[in-house]
Amino acid sequence: MIISDGPKPLSAKAVFAGKKVILFGLPGAMTPTCSEKQLPGFIEAAAAFKAKGVDTIACISVNDPFVMNEWSKAKDPAKEVLMLADGGAIFTKAVGLDMDTGNFGGVRCMRCAMVVEDGKVTAIGLEKGGAFEGASSAVSMLKAL
Image (cartoon, rainbow, N blue to C red; front, side):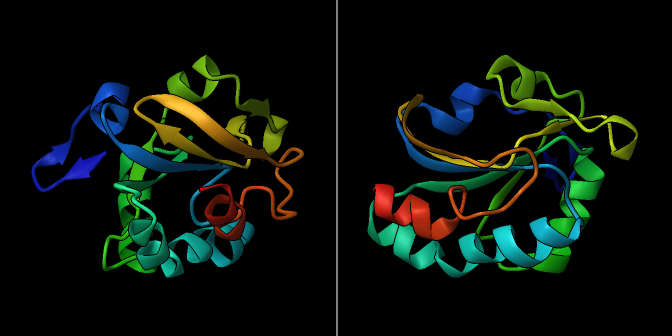
């Protein structure tokens, strides 16, 4: 994660403990589907999520924190979404959401979205590979709340 004085580790406990969180994962920042279809829905629905008691909307991707920070600046200047860099895919692999895209980009996060309440996943939408069919959309997560 990027903060004013550079990248710093952020524990899962800090993100999820005692909170209702919408976490969505995607294969890569700055890619067309992620940038033009999945991310904008969560930014646009931020007020609706907050009205339903969501404390944090977070996006995780297997990218470095500098890429995630620049993507945030370009697509979400109001910082509605907490951008989480999982550069080594440690979290992504630990929760079983990793996929190997081969020469395209190596190990990436499957396209997904979930409601996490105090660290427990209460609803999840998984897409097949990198496709975006709607299971991991903001609309799906709003319906799940």
